[in-house]
Figure: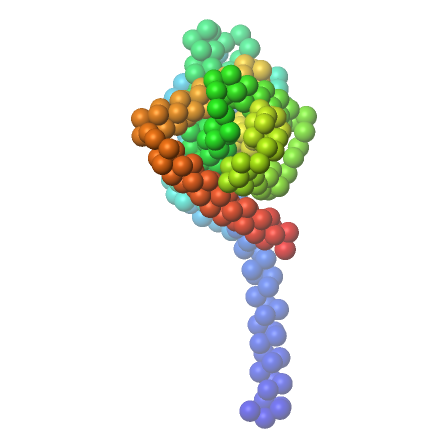
Length: 327
């Protein structure tokens, strides 16, 4: 190709690029946003913006409110005395990466959350202060169940609790260790959920993985370190970190604006219940399956190997995730 022809081709490509850029900018995908403003107790003004490319709506997604909520036209929803309690579903098409939901309460802080899944679902509990006892009990049950589910599906938290058992030799030490872990994570869970502190999630998750790695390293030797002498101190120190991890999950769910202390306490009770179930299960399996010095040594070595392998993987994975986010 001659220099002149190359120049002409380059100019044509440049002109095409210049023409395409404004078009591309004009057709950026606008995300889905549901804005709810409580105009009176249980009644909400609704503004729904489905995803679009700036010129047309891309899907037929529509929000579906809890069954007891009734539509009063396109721009008003009445949930009555029960309030906005239950799941808001977004049906009718793909909703990835999620739907932004902005809820402005009359008596409570504004909530900015994201509904995820396919279809996207968001649980909301706007139970009024003067709600019937049945609704209050339902709120307690819902948040306690969330706490149980979170601890039983949080593999890293369960592995840390199981790792602590390697250093507990008596019922008294077990009680002290579990109590210390409970007090610590309850304090930071409350502080973070009430927005008193705002630790970044990435470093917290990395430190949680490192806490499991520390237990694996400490369990691999018999030197009289603080972990061996006073596991309750280690449980308390790292329990503070794990509380921030619990709080990140609770933020995704949200707290009912008029029942924050009750919901927070219920979630924490659920976490403790799930934690005690996990501890009891580990102890029962150990006593049923491990008999004799050889079996004890093998079980100990296997536990150290599993803790160490998983924690190293999590440390690398979470560190790389943080690095990728900073680039």
